[in-house]
Image 1 (tube, one colour):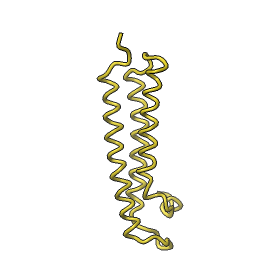
Image 2: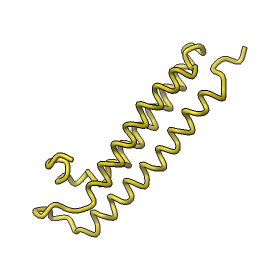
Image 3: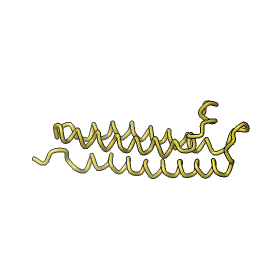
Image 4: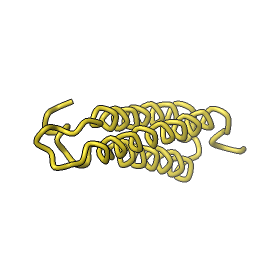
Length: 114
């Protein structure tokens, strides 16, 4: 992790913020694609957006996990930063489960019911 990122006060919460943003992006992309043209909501679009959003969620979880220890010059209390990092990494795991299940649903439920 880059030194500037490890010193950030938001780094422990990256799993929460990036995970929520990726889950939102995947949901909106899939939903709007089916609304615009149901042929777009097939398994290829679902798989592509699912993989891209899963990568963002994993990156957020890793940033949170690596930000457990406070840098020496930080004013953060170490136990508070570690707790926030554990919450961020755990939340990223839950968001990864949500992204995975929504990706699988794109293969099970057809985009068009004709």
